[in-house]
Each structure stands twice: as C-alpha cells, then as structure tokens.
Length: 341
Ligand code: ATP
Ligand code: MG
Ligand code: FE
View 1 (tube, rainbow, N blue to C red):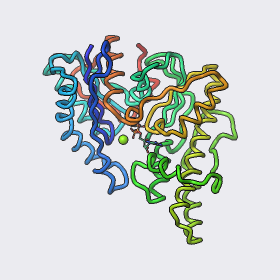
View 2 (view 1 turned 180 degrees about the horizontal axis):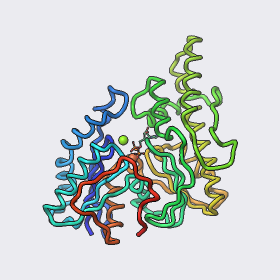
View 3 (view 1 turned 30 degrees about the vertical axis):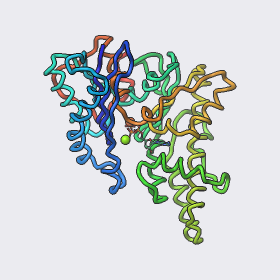
C-alpha cells in the first residue's frame, strides 16, 4: 500500500510517500523557522498561510523523487491534531480533496502517535511492548506502549514541555528560535559544575515532570552574572550546559523509574528533544545495566516530518480505518482515546 503523508500541525510542512512493502520512498520538508524567527515563536496565521503555499510544491517534489504517479497512491494520511487549528485545517482540507479527486481513502493521524512511531522507520525497529518518552515542543509524556493505539499514560509535565523549556531558556539567553539545537551547541563549550540547577520533582515518587522552574533558575543565574558584569559567551555556555544537564538528568531519572515500574527494558524516545545527543547518551548509559535498548529516529525524523505521518497512517489504513469527507481537526486530543488496531 502506497500512502501519502501530510504534516501541517505547527511550523513545518512535511510531505512523504511510504510504501508498506518498499518502505519510505520520498520525504520533503519545508520549515517556516525563518518566517517566525523575528517574532521569537510561531505566529499561527502566518503558519497556516505558508502551509497553503508549500503543499503542492512539496507534493510534486516527493512524486518526482519517488518516480510515482498520483494514480499509484492508495491512501492519504494527514495530521488531524493536536496542533494549531488553522494549520491543521490546511493539511486536512488538502488531504481530503486530493483523496476525493483520486477516489482513495484518508486517515487522520494523531501527531504524537506519528512522533512515537517514527523510530519504526529505522533499521532494527523496537518491538512492542516498550516504554516511550515523548519529548517535543508541546509534550513531555511517559507512555507504556503495548501496540498501535494501545497507550497507557504513565506521567507527563504539569507545566512546560521539555522542548518548550529549551526554547524559553534559549530566548532569555538571547539565542535563536528554536532553542534546543542552539543550547545543545553552546553547551559543548560549557564548563561543567559552574552552575547547578534543580532536578524538578525527582525527590518524590511518581512520573510527573515540571520544567517551568528550570528556566527561572537559568534566568536568575544569568541576571546575577549580568549584575556582576559577567555577561560573557563563556557564562552563557556554562548556563546552557547546566540547564541541559538538569533536563537530561531529570528525564533519565523518570525513564529509569518508568522501566522499573513496568518491568520493561526497551525505551523509545521521540519528538524534537530526542535529537539531543546528551539525552541519548545518558539514557543509553541508564539502560545498559538493565540489558535494555534505547530506540530513536534519525534527527530529521525526531522533529516534525511527513514520513512519520505516512507511516502511522499506513498502519491504520492497512487495519481498515478511514475517515469520511468531513474535514475535522482537533487542537487537543488525548492519545489514550485512539483506537487500537
Ligand atoms: P508537539 O510535537 O508537541 O506538537 P512540536 O511539533 O513543536 O510540538 P517537535 O517538532 O517534535 O515539537 O520538536 C521541536 C522541539 O524540539 C523544539 O522545542 C526544539 O527546541 C526541540 N529540539 C530540537 N532539537 C533539539 C536538540 N538537539 N536538543 C534539545 N531540544 C531540541
Ligand atoms: Mg516545529
Ligand atoms: Fe511535533
């Protein structure tokens, strides 16, 4: 089955072609980062308008790259939520009209299920059951995964998501948006232990997270240094390293607990923050004594992309799921509500 995947939930337009027999055939992405950078965050209306501009060129690009014709496509998968409603509507209307014209089915994919299944596109994919850590711009969740659509939420953030904390901390240090890669780069020059930030909510049992206090800790450290006329690049790098280390340690502690609690030793990490090298290394060291394994996608499939939507949609279409002609999207959509296949 050849499936066209369309992602438009936020500030990336992603289009991909995934074949259930041959694997991923083509993947194209347009990131709106430059469009939103001067505002320091995503402007929803600008995002929607830009998705409209990019979809057809990206579709043509994946058709050319794969050598497939439109008529060869068997189904269309699009992100139906959660995300920015206007942006989601662009992808959903495009998917529905394209599929209607070709007389093929559509399926609305949950964006976080897309992220969660992205490591399945790699060699040696994980096998169910496993624990998944979803760490993106809008989510920080620990999920027990027993199959597609069989999700048990074990814990999540009570405030900022991990990616959001990276973005906000970067902003207060005067770094570019998105902040995750910027902090990671700067942290490489940092001196360890000059600053020490808290590991929030690790002193009590449970699998909940809280990241909003960390950016405040970083802000206080930065303001203190400013007051002492120590606003150097080195100071910034030292704060970036201390912040990253605090996030990585906190995530590692909770992942270890989730593995202990479930008795599993397979850990999948997904979403933009799973591209972070320090996080990958720390989790790999944590699972080693458990004889476990950490699975993740290649960096460009950690952040938003069409390939993960094409893959997740293909699994659901193969199971017989498909939507009607109504164009419906959801800004909020708990993943546990998804049907299992
Ligand atoms: P959601 O998926 O929750 O709707 P989103 O789609 O905006 O949110 P993603 O595209 O999965 O999120 O990821 C983007 C986030 O990942 C940003 O917050 C970004 O700063 C962060 N990020 C990307 N690369 C890295 C990295 N190397 N280290 C840390 N964070 C990173
Ligand atoms: Mg994005
Ligand atoms: Fe995302």
